[in-house]
Image 1: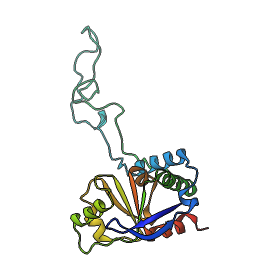
Image 2: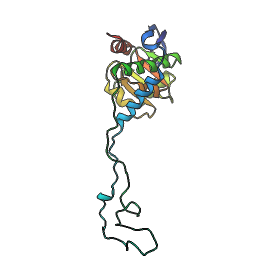
Image 3: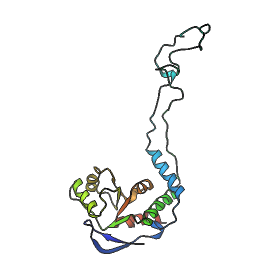
Length: 210
């Protein structure tokens, strides 16, 4: 699959980049993507949720009324979950939500997501991108030139560029990452994938090298 390479003004450079079929043209595995996204979201959870149970509530332990003879149910202390302000029964406790996935499955998931983007023709390749100083306006102009303004865009760089990152972080529907950090969730969460030409070779080295 060949894609015309554009520059940051949106004009064609006259070059074409060939996307490797083993990277952008495999048969997508939906279940692998589901597991990888599930792990990604689970690993982001802090798991610090906690509610106080009856043993942790500071209330009187005095028996409220006689065991028998009142005509109602027997009752213990005010710590009981039955009373307002009492401890919670079976409340949440701190826990770790993360789980393990095999490296091969995670690679398959990323390649499946990239293949979907290529199949839907939602990949744009630019020759290079540089911003002299961090300004959201400069980054927004590049998106406008590429006719991607207002869309959810993931820009993949070959190497980290702090100016580009700082220029993009105020735009809610945009994210900048590197080819080495690319993951399934970010690819699927974006409408359009913008690859800097040098990031293609980084992806090939990452996923296709034996």
